[in-house]
Length: 173
Image (tube, rainbow, N blue to C red; front, side, top):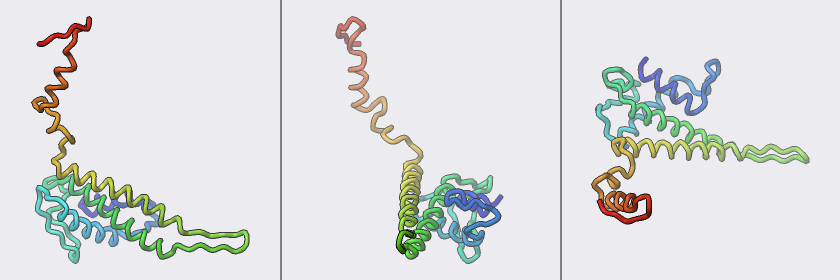
């Protein structure tokens, strides 16, 4: 399966467009959003592959989902960025449709739809930024370099942890 198939499925899950009989977004729109987002992702981070992204030709070269050039970080970041792009456009559309109508005891209020999408957008944005930071940091554990066995704080922790025996007597190694 090419990048069009794999990334499209991932994006559709992130934006909750899963009804195959009645997709909200066409395959063409999803693919173009993926291409635009992948271009933006290549500006956010450096990847092991040098990607050539052509929006007009609808191509990414090399294919990031191909077994020879597989790049899971690029795929994950692109899927998240595409979902952000789509949800952002939905917020703009829903914000222009935000109305409140009251007629006697009846009321229709569509102002909350954009608010709910904004919460989703902020959550996805935070996850994208965390994923990007994790990738740029090389997948390392935060603070690992600071609290290594040879750091000054590690010496203090090892000394204070075992300075007393089981009878409460202070001893040195």
